[in-house]
Length: 81
Image (cartoon, rainbow, N blue to C red; front, side, top):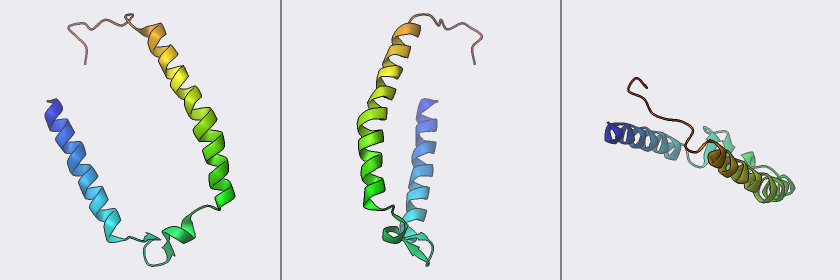
């Protein structure tokens, strides 16, 4: 069953990727290019330093702590979905 869902995800990703490539380099077909749609460098730098180096590691730490707290507390039963 897991193989079927994996193949479904791969087919969807391939279809979406093919659709995206047909419009390259346009974000909005035939009107705005990727370069025109990109945020200014200062905004991108702020997102990198603020989100990438501060918030993202905190999210990883929170996920690891949550996993540690709830590990072993959930048991599978015969009537799970």
